[in-house]
Image (cartoon, rainbow, N blue to C red; front, top):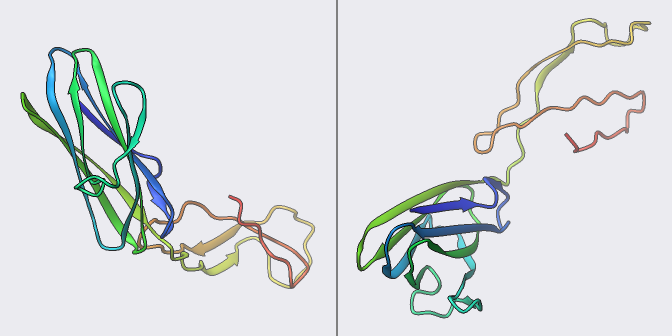
Length: 178
């Protein structure tokens, strides 16, 4: 089997994502297992490619003939697994797909992929913000305020939530915490 995970599904441009591919072999000896990674290359920076060797040592593969994109992990005995981690980031925005194919001399190739959205653009502001329970500039003893607005738009990552900040201070600033 082959599994592939990403450390985050939504990142800013230049923010690292760690991709981990793990191949396991439940029933036989897999010979010369090779991980081939591919992805959206526009704006891609591959920071590292590492694997733990059979003797327990960790090795970086950035200097191999495939510049870390492809890694030969060797044989996998039955009941064991081997993994490779790639650390990468993109300067360009958009939906990025990271794909890994695990091939061997004696098994059918296995393929896994994961998507990451790179989004460095803030969402638009909400529009038509009004109170449905209070009139602006008019005192009210009702402490409960009902709001209505037209939703903000973010074409890549979407909007994860809204916050309301009320203050009598015209220079007050809302928190960025959700």
